[in-house]
Structure formats: structure tokens, C-alpha cells
Length: 216
Image 1 (tube, one colour):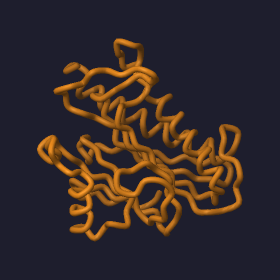
Image 2 (spheres, one colour):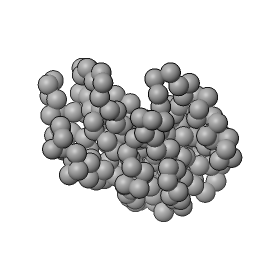
Image 3 (cartoon, helix red, strand yellow):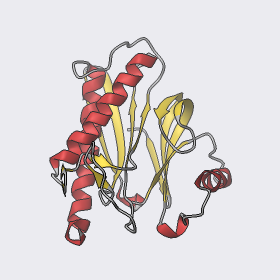
Image 4 (cartoon, one colour):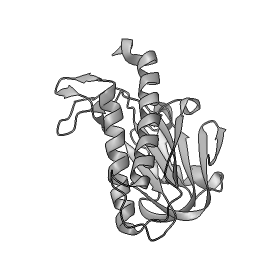
């Protein structure tokens, strides 16, 4: 597996080399070059309503000398991250997830959570197959599908049906640039990444439910 370093409130996923990372992270969204993905644990006190989150996060990253990193924010105790590795053919995938469902939603609906705490699901997946830009986009759809399938597996009930994710999820895909054109469900890279992401998110969701389900 790729190197992980936990130093609360930070978790660092060292990708081993500079490579394209696709995400909608707060600080470096889109397709960027990065060698590491970070999680930053936050609490309500860290993020008051009038806070400029972009400026705050930039200052936090500057202090850590980590402005280069793709960074994900989570309210989950960072020590409770989950991970899974999967291999299919010649492709290996490594997934890291932090999972909380207090902010759960069902796709196509919206729950009024005014005055409530916010949770989120953050997933980073690294694969060792070299991908084209099109394959990278397709792989993002596979990891998104895996996240959704894992959340639906735990059958968290909402007024509109079972949850499919949360309102603030963020996913990041890391893979070297290469010639692999396709990354769908029939491909080795799609199978490996999908299985790793599914297992990491499912374990995280099950762990969260054991602790917090009685409160909801």
C-alpha cells in the first residue's frame, strides 16, 4: 500500500510520485499534479459561519508546507479512517475513506439540516495504471458508483428513501498519465478501483452506524 501518515488533525496519503489527481477539493479542484492527498479534521469551532474557509485552509496548509497537496475536509475523527486495497489482473488500487452520515442525502432530494452538525464522505483512490484523461473521468464515475453502492448497503433511512451519499462528499482519483483508454466496470482498473472504494466506504459507514445510529 502507499504510505499513510496520521498526525491528528491531519492524515497524509503519499502517492509515491507526482501524478495527475482529479477531484473537486476545496483548495485544488479539477485535474492537477500532486504527490499527496491530505485530510484535515475539523470541528464546528474551526469553521464559524463568518469564516473565509479558503483563506483559513490556505493558512493551515502554508503552516504545514503543504500548499501542493489536494486537501479534503472531514468532521470525522481522523483516526477512524478506513482503507482497502484490491488487485485485478495487473492493476492495484488503494482506497482511503473517512465516512460520516449525519449529513446524509438521497440523490434528487434534500433534507433541511439547519442547525445540525454536518458529516461527509471523503474518498481518495490511487491506481497504478496509466490513464488517459477520458479513462480518468470514467474511473471517477466508477468510484462514485462504489461510494453510492456502499452507502446504500447500510440502508440509512431518510424521509425520501435510503441514503445514497451526503451533501458534502468529495472524491479524488490519482493515477499516472498513460495510454489506458477505458476504465469501466469491465476493465481491470475499474474492477480494482471500484472494489477498493466500495470496501473502504462500506467499512467506514458500518463503523459510523455502530457509534452514532442511536442518536439519529
